[in-house]
Amino acid sequence: MYWTRSVELDLSGPGRVQKVRSTLEAVECLRLWPNKQGDAFAEAKRVCRAVLMNGAPRGVAREAFIRAADEAGIYIRKR
Image (cartoon, rainbow, N blue to C red):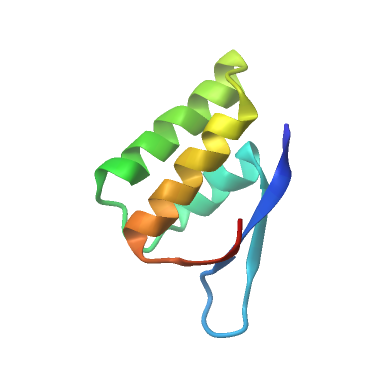
């Protein structure tokens, strides 16, 4: 269930990048999310679960994950 392009987040401080390459990695990352409030965060969790459980398109999970990062103010290195 790897995405066609990874998402690189600056979660751990300056110069420390976390590369998220799949829906499963996104779910693991969301467990450590700095701000677990917000509509985009809840939607990303819901969409990622749907991809893992029901085979929904992987790209949908990636886009929801990016929206959750934007909502939380997490710097995304490249898209």
